[in-house]
Image: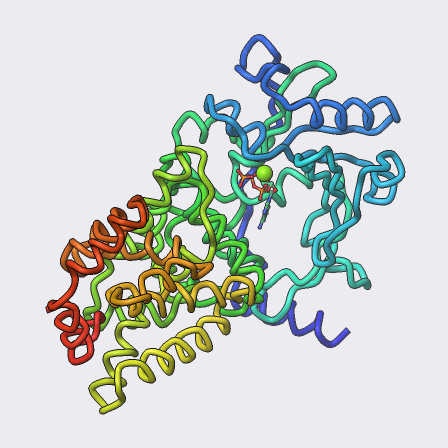
Length: 453
Ligand code: ATP
Ligand code: MG
């Protein structure tokens, strides 16, 4: 096939084909030499492992489920690797769904818990020679499909990081380590398996995953794994926006959002994800609000509270919105139309980088628009604003702006008291606004809340 030929030529020219992969030795760590005990593995995960084993298949816990337990943490979910094909897994579990195209897997559903079951994947170079479409890369080295099955060792070596390629066997309680994962876990470092540049080209999202795990686990990124990131960061623009949206949510919803944000900036990864924000920051727009919002988000997650994607996006895109809003006002547009124009433009550009599903972009716009309505409280306005379905989020956003020092404190406190007050006190609060009522409004008209100084 001409495409394959082209890939080979490109890979030859770039030298990727000539790089030697490090050699790895398979190690088995018996039960008495590690800390993973069956009691920390969820019942559904154990059920899936046992049923696969009883049906004569190999099945292991792998990925975050093993890594996080070894580190003394609570895994977010449990992933299982098996030699059963997706169809065979699907046949064994009535409560399962076959999903994915680029990467076919099975989800076994137990109430709210989803166990992800993946069939052992084969390795790239062997598959390249095959005349089929199951494993394909494009001219940038990007892996388009990855459905070539293989043995357990191949499966381990096509995983991203060494600490993610540890397998737990429920039959004899051992851990199987193909890529020195235990050593890197002890050294607390994120290391790609194989040649870093090739692995990032196959899937540039691995750069984001490196950052995510480094922030979440408080690990270093090993020098060779770290080295190509800045240069290859622009490859993320080849990733479908919908996948990047999902990755952004994972980046910021693990409870280490601020650390993640620092790393993204440090490795030039903010620009491919949030080009408008990166541009605004480079032009001098402050990011105090982003940081404050991420700190709040991290606190919320630690308290077990939920975080809404639209709040996160409203915060991360805020500097871009400010810059665009101000520019339009400087060009003579009145505040309100300038805001609407800026909102449209910022969202329009953002969805080219990471998608924003409509159910999130709508509320995000409302949070922004309400920032202009919150100062205007006279007459019935405060009541009307409070009835808005996005009032609560907009009020939270206002508090973040105040905490970030973007606007003078006071308004947030007023709304806090107003919400808690009874009817009589509310009327009193409104009448106290009285004569000064037009003051802040006028000021805001001339000098948009966008402007700090
Ligand atoms: P967490 O679930 O805590 O986010 P995880 O390591 O389990 O972390 P998942 O996204 O659940 O991450 O993926 C499960 C495993 O699949 C990973 O540990 C890794 O072995 C493999 N994997 C996931 N994404 C990739 C990728 N882009 N390239 C290579 N291997 C991957
Ligand atoms: Mg996982």
